[in-house]
Image 1 (cartoon, rainbow, N blue to C red):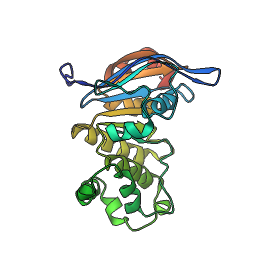
Image 2 (cartoon, one colour):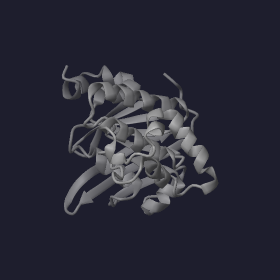
Image 3 (cartoon, one colour):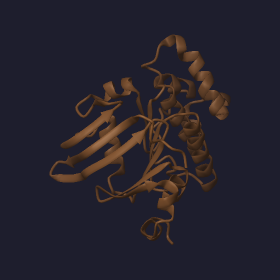
Image 4 (tube, rainbow, N blue to C red):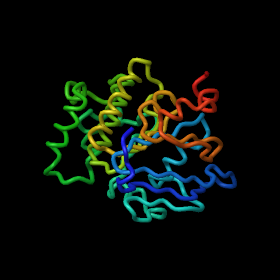
Length: 242
């Protein structure tokens, strides 16, 4: 297990509450992500995983608590300010721009970056995802589901994230593709990218996570090193069918 005790915190969430009208979706969430870590949040559908990611990226209002990014309070910052500060999200369901080319999708991911760095950034993501280089002139809608997921990840990487938010990257993919996507996520972490992974596939996520959190009905019920949570009886019975 790698030691992150001396790594600075990138994301700190304290006592976070969020509502949809009168309905409370998040109840006092506390989470920390340190530089270089891969932190996974697992839980069932409707547990609050996507709501938390939306709160971090600035599109879901926070009713109480605080979000700090790189030591700066961003609780009230706009979504645009958060992107410019280095928070990049790969949304649930990929949400690529189907009628646009693969390359134009990637260029959109770099809209906050200096134009002089665009060619180098494209080369970097094409090296990570060679299939996107092959298909860069095709429209994104012609890609398979797995290729669209790679495009969504590559588009986020074009923004040079200090924190990469991944929302359900395995959703709707065949088992072999899920394995490939998680291999890519692990390799991004090994390159030093700080990742907050939200995922229903608890086994795949916790197996590669430095730290894992389990969310139920809007609150964190368990946390610890990913492999330790995999061995936890409560996690096994609730999420792993064991």
